[in-house]
Structures are given as structure tokens and as C-alpha cells.
Length: 565
Ligand code: ADP
Image (tube, rainbow, N blue to C red; front, side, top):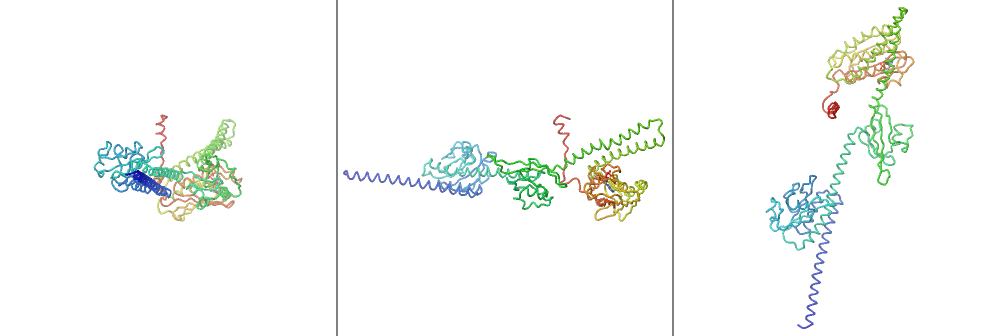
């Protein structure tokens, strides 16, 4: 060899070295490109919001192909921190859903340490799972990749190859870790999605089952959401809830209450809305404010406070009775008793005083009986109802009122058109009390010379007791309130007639407690007709059974627990 040959050889070696380097570079580039393509494929699936299982199946398949392995598995940590197989590629056992031990095996090890692991001789590995020993093909190499997000391990990607890899372990780790990242994000996303879904379901259940009406508005007051109770309130107002979204609250309020001008800015955080028969609502309005301070939405929660208000009114009425209606006759009786002691009092005046005392006591007695009867009628149960003959009951009431009608020079007649075929079921004392109240009122509110006609008939499924009088009649504006407790018509023609304002509310309570109803028609100076409907069959809904309200009185137990009993 001469120098020229040597130089040629050097040149050749240098060229071969360059070619090898180029080859290596090419292979690395090729590998990086494959890795990038794999990550892209997984990312695309995620962007398309594919199901988590689809993403994970793609992840394990791509990971296996990327490192030229045989098969692979994705295991996730469930809420109990147990490892569960979620996706497979290249094998089918153990299957998806299988719980893998955490205390032994590679997946458990990776989940615990959060570190990449390679096991080349599984059967002799100190942490190997005895159930897996001999199950793996000879020469298996196991790669365990942690799937973690912000330092929290959410699962493990396990890939198993057979031959010694041509690529070095660091590169394999790099490739698998690149695939693991989008997989971890997909898992965390799915977790968040699930939490959001559960929160949403919880919120939905609250909105669906709360007795409050809930509405959500945009910052301009347009309606965005109404819960079922809010829809029911609107429907009772004859405003169909369908298609209401997007409409402005002020326009809606203007529709409900025409003639009133509404401005969102004027509506305070607590508003009282009285919807008449539909209910009285206390509405709390709260803004939902974004971090920057801008109002994003408004939430309005309306609570029906009609019952509370009714009880409140009842309480005031009862105080009124005690302070006025009971005190007056009491004072009158007391004064009369004092006067009776006067020795020089003429006999006829003594008689008048005695009458005054008796009438005062009767008034107080009537008042107390009405209040007690009302309470009883409202708390009646079906268990105590007994069969009774309605015609006999009505006849007895007529008999009882004949004397009074005579005294007032009012003609009282009774006629039976049809009678119920069987006995009715109910509380006879209360039923006769209800009929008595109607007959008594008719006589009371009919001037001398008038007529009261009572009839018994059967219409459809109801026995109907109709009390028709030719009395003062009731002005139309009072008719809707007539059956309310303590309601009395303020009319100069009837002001002199004594009463408690409880009689008709008692009739209604008794009728409803028996599955019936009461109605009124009246014309001023012509007369009134009150009709009491009682079901012929025991049409009253049973108090127990599915879907019925159950009451639990736990006051005593709670008292005991708190040591106050
Ligand atoms: P009261 O004890 O005042 O009679 P009610 O509840 O029985 O109480 O009746 C309520 C009001 O309805 C009465 O105050 C009266 O003004 C009116 N009313 C009831 N029945 C008649 C009737 N038959 N004719 C005219 N007005 C009546």
C-alpha cells in the first residue's frame, strides 16, 4: 500500500461512518415522525370527543406498534384506588373490567412509584405476580408506563414485547412516555366530565324536586331556564312554558299584571308576588358574578308562602276573636251580673238582663264550638267515618230549625227529589253541623216574610243538599271570599246580624274532608242558593297507599336526643 491507497481507505471509512450516522439520523427521524403521527392520531380522537374507551384502545394499539411490541394493556385506578383493566391490544385475557392486584406485579409497582419500569425476566422478578408467572411468552420484556397528570398517577400503560429491542431502552421510554401524555389528559378529561355530569344531575334533581320555583335569567333579564315548579306556576297563569326561553322577565310580568310598569333595575333582591289563588310567592333574586365582577346571570328562587301567610292570618284572626269577639259578650255578661245585684231593679229589667247574659254566653259558646269544629274537620281521618242515612240527617236539621224560622217569620220547607240508594259514610255530627250552618244562615239572612227551601237530590255521583233563600243576597265581589275563615260580608243591610264568620269555612272544611264541595250563587235582594255536594260512593281518596304523603312526627325522639325531654 502506498500513501495514496491509505488516503483512499481513510476517505472510504469516513464515508462509511457518515453513511452510518446518516442512517442512524434517518432512523431517529423516522422514529420521531412515527411518534409524532401516533400522538397526532390520539390527539385527533380526543379533539373529536371520542369516548374514553376508544381513545385508550387507540393509545394501547399505537404504543404497541410504535415500539414493535406484541401486546399491551391500559389499566386505570378507580375511585377505590384499585387497578382495573380498561383497554387491551393483541391479547384478550385478563379481560376489560378485570381487577389487577396492586401489591404485586408491574402495574401495581408503576402505580405506586409513578416511574417507568422495564422487566426483562418476569418469572424471576422479585415483585412478579404469581398468577402471571409462566403465563407470559418466553423472553417477554414488560414496559410499564405511568399515566399521570400533575403528579397524580391515574393509570398504567403496560406494553409487552418478545425479542430484545433494536432501539435502546431510553428511546423506548421516551416514545412510550410521549404516548402516555395524551392518554393521561384523556383520562383526567373523562374524570372531570363525569364529575361535571354528576354535579349536573345533582343540580337537575334539586331543580326537579324542590317545591320552590327557580328561574335563571341573562343579564338583560331574558329567561334562560325554568324548573318544573316555575313552569307549573306559569301554566296556572295560563302562560305556556313552552317557547318561553329567551323572553324578557319584565315583558312577562307586564303580561301577568297588565297596567304595571316594571324595570329590572327597580326589582330588589327580595320581591313579594301575590298571584291570588295561585299563591303568594317570596322571590329571592341573586346575581351570579364572574371573577371580573360582571354579572353573568341572575337566579330567582320563589317560595310559595301562601300557607304561612294563611296561618299568620289565622293567628291574627284568633287574637282578634279573643280580644274582641269573646271579650265583648264577656264584658256584657259581667256588667249584667253586676246589675242583677241591684236590690231595686224592676222584675222585667231583671228578666232582660238574664236574657242578655244567656245570649252572651251562647255567642261565646258558638264561637268556641265553631273554632273547635273547624279544627276537627281539618284533621279528620277516614278511619273514624261511619255509615249514616242522609235523608234522616237532613230531616233532623230541618226540625231543629223550625222554631227559629217561625220566630223570624220565615217559611222553611223541605223537599226530597231523589235520595241516595245507600247509607253514606262520614262523620254524622259534622255533616249535620254543615247542613245546619247553611239552613241557619238562610233563615238568619232572610228578612221576615221570606222563604227558605231545602232540597235533597242525587246528581251524578253526588248527593246534593240545596238551601235556597229569598233573603238579602250577597254582593258578587264577596262571593270568592265567602268560605274563608272569619270572613263576614260588610254590608249595612246585614251588619246587625250576629255571627263569627266561621260557619261557611266550617261547611267547606267538612265537605272537603268527606270528598265533597260546597258552592254558592247569589243575587242581592233576590236571595242565595248554597249547594252542598257529598259523594254517594265513598269517593274520598284513601289516606294511605303509594305516592301519598307520609307524616313523621319525630319531635319526641329529637327532644330525647337533645336531652330536652
Ligand atoms: P257568620 O257567622 O257571619 O254567619 P258564615 O261563615 O256563616 O259566618 O257566613 C259568612 C258571611 O256570608 C256572613 O257574614 C254573611 O254576610 C254571608 N252569608 C252567609 N250565608 C248567607 C245567606 N244565606 N244570605 C246572605 N248572606 C249570607
